[in-house]
Length: 212
Image (cartoon, rainbow, N blue to C red; front, side, top):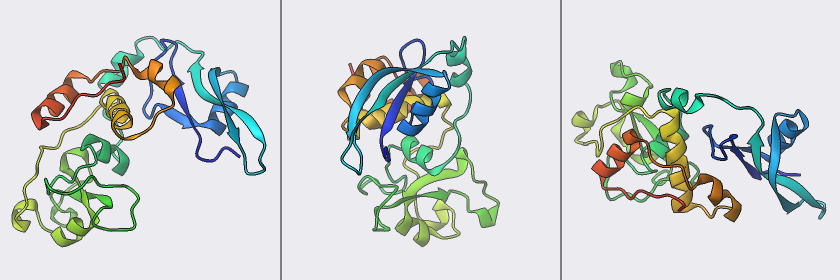
């Protein structure tokens, strides 16, 4: 009925406070029914039967989490492929001329994946500081070699993003590559890069995006 529809989740301060800052419309409705959130804005959608339904476009938490910003600022984000792609801006970390990679692609040369910088066979861990985002084609070619052994060079040094870092990087990605619902922009316009992200983006020469 609501497959694929996403709802923005904001805090009592009218800005996203979680990463990821969204939930499915079905989860949003469940949370409304349980009294955990309130609906800020709705949107009409048409289901498979041709029926017009109103689903939450933006929901706000009913609970005040004092000091939450300070707590999430210092907590490392979960390590997974999507978060790694966001950290690197969906760019291959070995090939500066490669196009932006995708998490879903039928072509291995454009499908992004996780690479152990120090291979697992050599004791490398699956962790932020030993992770590079690259294409499946290059990852297979690199095999169980270090970048030096394969004649490769990392474009940027790995770093450990916090939840707050990832919140900005997600919104930055939206603003650069996704057509956002207009009503979302009011609630994300005050999300700015953390000092940590700002240093990384400036070092890379990347643009700083925000909604305002």
